[in-house]
Image (cartoon, rainbow, N blue to C red; front, side):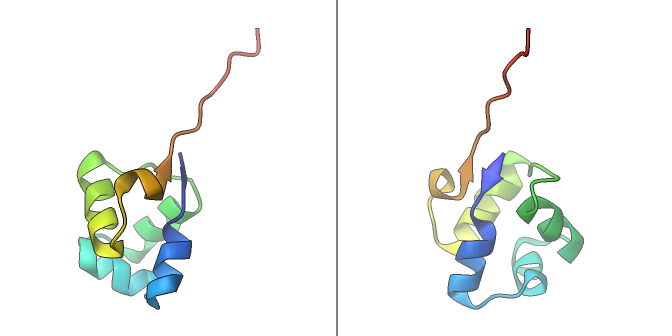
Length: 69
């Protein structure tokens, strides 16, 4: 899943640690989500959108995997 967390976090002047504290996860979790290595739970996705002040649809974009057959 693609996301714009880093962009929105930067717009608000938040560090990864500050955002992590606001949504009650570790800084490493924020890093993994921003890099696309971890997809958040629905609960965490809504918490992130609330903390960043954006709609969830503006924060996350699903990536469709295609079969190579």
